[in-house]
Length: 417
Picture 1 (cartoon, rainbow, N blue to C red):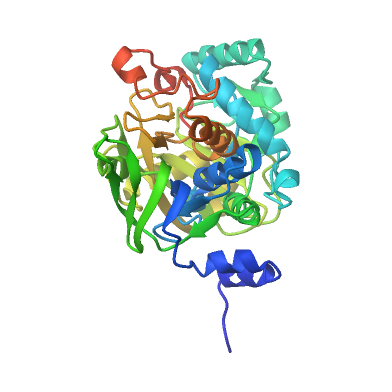
Picture 2 (cartoon, one colour):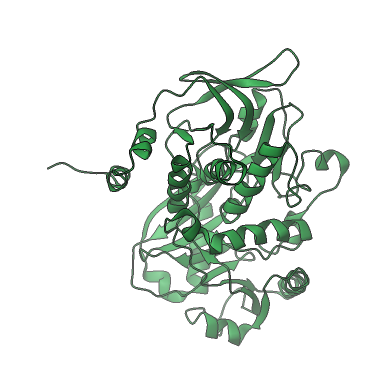
């Protein structure tokens, strides 16, 4: 009996679209493109789509060393929110959230966006003060966020352990009702199909091994495992490995790469109505449409390109979840995994031109990458097409680390995810 993978079944489902089938067979790329995007994750595919849709640039190749959406896009925990503290961050993530709200219609593909609410729990006086600060800052920016006391948290999310004995009792929480989740790999497939329909080439199993520059120092193209590809512009969106790719062009970035772990449980009937996050005990949880409890942990304490991470991180996270939601103590875990996140000193991204003419970078998202996907791709496409930043990503330059104009969400955020 022949067996089929999820990817092969997906390809068959799209069999009526000949162009899409060609991309899945990863043809030999053409020798020259206007723009090459390195990385076929959510951000890279979104960038290609918006280059074609909004800027009329369709001679674009998206290069992926593995398979489409096989990096962090396929490993994230699907959370979407825009309740960041600083004005610059709030503008970027709110731009993304507004695009999320109409993304399925825009792509004609169900990305399974679910605005079920994101509840961020406070367990001590510092948490309460920090979250109330976030609520006020968000409202000044026209972004929804509200403070709930412990009883209101329980009413919004009944499974929570509010009254029981806990090391870190729940004192309240900040709720963004428009926040929620989406299906991570569906986002990649939706953008890929929509970009392909507009003429973008998506080339899998095509690793970038070098970035060639002209005698004047500008980008000339990329060396790949499938030959040299000439390009006027190159955008690098290779989560976890951006510093390696940019190093090929002699560009150094203030990045460190860490494993970030997550787990999913066995599927059960609907039991958890929203997304709950807690930084003090560092765990967050939601229920997927398949019924699995999606549980996220923190980053490991050491830099690494490992996609597994330390076992004790996952154990501590499960301890916290069992305390927050006691009824989940009987759940069995199906699998755990780790992605690799690029982290900047201020925990905010870089979406900018590099010192090399024609070379652009989108990186450093840390734990914020998935929720920013549409907004990130949208403003990065603007930057590549016009060779200047969109007003939303103008603050997120490389030079801010030299000039000390940081967007320090690492110190301001009561929750890092």
